[in-house]
Image 1 (tube, rainbow, N blue to C red):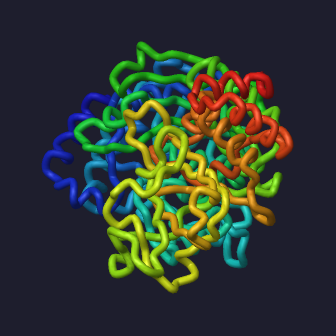
Image 2: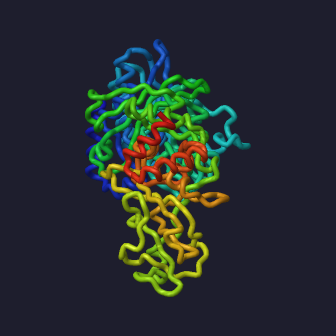
Length: 495
């Protein structure tokens, strides 16, 4: 059955321009991925009727895959499927495909297609509002490949789910939230979604809802970013998750990985402690791939503090240079102050000037100026292939006594004191942390992108301030800013 449905889907993809499908955030699941996802469910044996929800069903690939898996296991007698789909371009194909499954399945199969908006049609129920159904329909299992599409903050779908929305929402996590709402207690949900929700401030409310109402049981990672969706040019870090709607936290999360969506027979498996994978006040999800990464998380999580806890904070550089061209200068002049870029971070220290264009600014805007005091500068962007994600440099105000204020371009971050100026020892101590192998590894596990996000760094575990000061004194004495020396010094404190 699945081969026939894939064939019909491919005909549709060939005929329907990608631009048109992008309006719906529509990317189709491959046969192999669909069968793998369907196989993740732990269905209780001898269940009479299994109720299934597939929201944003597309051509019905996932639903068909689940029916194939269930009939091969011979553990249910009947499948009752509910699909949501609003794209008129594919509705007829979905109906034909589900009718084909009904006529060819070896188990009893019934289906319903709902053409209402999946989110807005249920917002009264989700928010427990007057007029909503006090006992909305719930399903044994939920399977989905939701639409991947950013929507405005005031879009009807976003305003329908304020509990999980913050900042710029995306339809995929609204679908995941509603899917969980539609699930019975102890029911299971398998979704293929981007990894972006696993960290950062934008997804905090979603993580709090999702990981409070359910518990992660399985995560599948794809090593190759562009080999997840067939016939699609998608550079999106995508994962498959399986969650159970329960308050009982499992001891472990199964983390599997494959190179692409075509080699599920070569899956590697790792079992990681749940509180290592889901950790911290922000409920970040750490996508570990081996035992060394588990060890990195366990070592640093013992430290127990964050930068804000000890009176420090990472902030983003102040000046967006291309929006302030009129104030940029190539050379110093009266009233000009330095504008520091990531290129000024060289071999662990900040060097200025370097004869770079636009490395000075002349401005009266207070928001573009900061005190000339000690900082640790950290690059915000690095290339995917670079050895290190965290690249930093020590900035000492005493090296630039002629300036009261300076500016930083917004492609660097800087660590500052919340109430008091950082001592030289503290700046060097922070350098040891952020230039070490273990901190770089920690950040890579936390964030799959090439951007160093200040919100995430401020949530990372660090030693207490006195310890950072002590670490700084040690590296100052050695006069060696190499990564290996940072590792050696830090080993004493989180070995």
